[in-house]
Image (cartoon, rainbow, N blue to C red; front, side, top):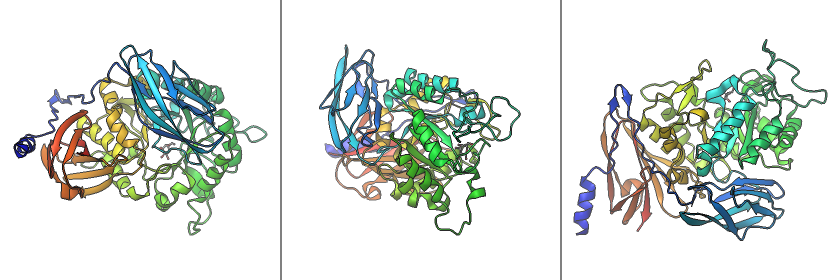
Length: 510
Ligand code: GAL
């Protein structure tokens, strides 16, 4: 009987992804099931902070509001707001504090364990959020940032764990410009950086974001100017770190840009690490937690040392500038990032750049946004690769134009759980040909998440065997995009995948 069931499973194509071209446009088929009306607390299951630093954490929870939140065994010094689910406070003593988070509404209740790890490590799971670059470029303003925070709540993204609202370049004064908004004194007499006129109140903006339980991020360069030609931190590192902390920022993207001009000789062994070490040390002195994102495009094998001076590091050039060859640029960037899997650890992640879907502006020319030209299949592949690679999940499209399809790609809690798994392993690339590849990520519960990617322009049937995966025994398999159990399999799995599509599954021991 068992072999008959197995035969049936193996002989029907397991994944049927319909993707027909309707009037030249691909049908945007939605795989992510709608969340239940009853509460569900989503990942992560742990969060790192330093002793004495202020905590702001909004419990990511779907379900019909109002939801009532409660926590059992909440550590001393921490409060959980019953109505908003926002946790605030300070924990003075290092340690691991596990509590039971509870959420209830008129449809039901939900509870799960959640750990605050108070020590010297931040970003114990990959940072999730939004960044302004690929949609607003030098048009970014205080108003747009505040609206992005509003939208993170209104669209439900925050209920899935998205929490950083990050300005990229162009919030400072520009070195050379005719525009009165951005052309002015770059620092005051004491050397404190002066934001441009589109950012009248950097502290007020961070407070606004924090009031929603979200976190604020910003950007600068270790060089005298940023890539877009705005004021950099060179020779003001300590002062800028203190200013960013004083304003209340929680995330800093530190972009090499013009640093080369002042960097000295390249043969110097410390050449690449020096500017990051300097800023890292300054951030450690602040009385708030600031996640440091290294942006220097993978120079000097940054993956080998990035974890000593930062929480995540870009491994490649800009994804938005990557040439489309036969395939869209996210494949080459992602596959290049995949090579550094062994260096990813909790608190130190390889960063293949942002999720560019929905409405994005072409980075060549910093254009206004238009809908992505990625097919739906490609978007599922993109999100699957980033999740398997434990990459920071930072969306950089238009928050004001998030449609149902884009949200279904960004907000599938089982897919995000792969990314946010506390074991913190990056998927290994198993098999890569011109036609297909497989990524395998071990999970904390002993299961494995597997992505099978079809690079062909046609539908393809792909078989993976337990030998390929180096596993044995019966496995219970779940389709993560559809959130559906597929049954029990004993030695192989066969799947039919659409052009440039993916099958993302999780294999549990029986
Ligand atoms: C690039 C960086 C981009 C963006 C841009 C801003 O160097 O890789 O992500 O930050 O600078 O000017």
